[in-house]
Length: 459
Figure (cartoon, rainbow, N blue to C red):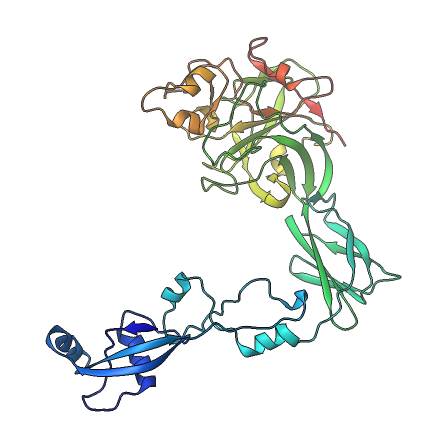
């Protein structure tokens, strides 16, 4: 039994108490909330005196009713088979009895299940579930053009494929289906539904990324996002594992745009609220096959193996994404696209900004850096500090291991390059050619500045 001691009821003295009215007025005026799972059983009426009478007069009342509430047992449903048993208790929005529901929602207890739903779960009709296997495209795949064939098998009578807001249908032939559907730029969630003759369904989903016609690309092993082998990640939780670990770079043409699509081993996140990304600072240098090494962009602490004519910068902060000339001139701004399901970061550049460069014949130098603010490094590239300084930066510098990489050289100066030693490369991961080792290429003890390889576009 639950006793509500202060229940102010809007009535004049002497009127017989009405349970329903007590319920309604109780909800309106009292701080307690009456749920339909309680049943009023005893009502006592007594005159109001003192402060209680003064408060009651504000609501035109002069009586107080004390209600004893009996808690009702929770509703029970009988289920005859596991498939008829709901997976979890059902909470029905908007079913709170004449209250805001905040108190009862905080208890995480479900209210009574509507009878029609109970009937549906306990004894409603069950439909057959057709078989469904999607054989192509693979989940998380990268399309080589702006359409894809969705294939698979089913014993259903109809197959529906939904992508980019449009649904396509086909009747399977001998248990197999093949439907070619167009793709939208970026990530595409493809939903495949098989429908049986009695209306029963089965569903499968895959994600496919589309950036146009693929020209070629590169691969890079996972787990080498440690520079020359000694670099360690910042300790702040924003720096998720693999966030700087390049695994692929693919090049696409889509109309008047070129897309440079990097794939990373870790999750694509945006902890600092940038344009799609806020951790990575990607450089893709485009140049010639021969020539002497030339400096890379300021702040990288690197050279590029051969002369370059344009560099593609992918960075979600400070409007730094775009195409740049060797003298630092910004040739065009970039469009950033991310596909978290496939761990991809795409940088779109107008073809006109490439000054006629043939992307199929160009050489590519690819490096991943840590993004920073303008006062933390040069060119929005965050420096890598020595492990000794990173591990024990001193009083007031506890943010250093949280937001900077360690294992390089030098320590913070908070002016200029913000680094006392710029002999070490600030690249966390790079793509190297056959017979090359990243740990050797980025070993600044052997050669400084380190030289970023330039590679022909692979297929």
